[in-house]
Image (cartoon, rainbow, N blue to C red):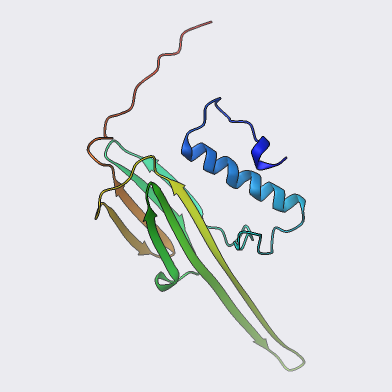
Length: 159
């Protein structure tokens, strides 16, 4: 199934859902093609163990994003905001060497990742704070005052 033919989950998609659907469809396409551990046409390393898991929580005044990036140093992370999109990029590498009497094994793994999170708003300058501890990147993105409280509760009636 190509990404263009992926139906919307809720009829009308939000930017977050469209991006999420595109990413899922892309990963499924790669898995079907047997390319889940090679770089793809967009230059991403798509080994699922390399892609960081993201948790996104929304409060009334901010978005809170946590990314699990074990084995990645703070210096190998790049976090930017481009318009209304949060971009988290990084490189992960690991080396191991095992020397014994009868054999010598050296293994190296390298990969890069890039995750994009649509925010639904453009944060003001200086409204993003980040911390990094024990392989977890935590970001707090303050919402501009004009989008705080813009949530409308929709009552669901019985059919």
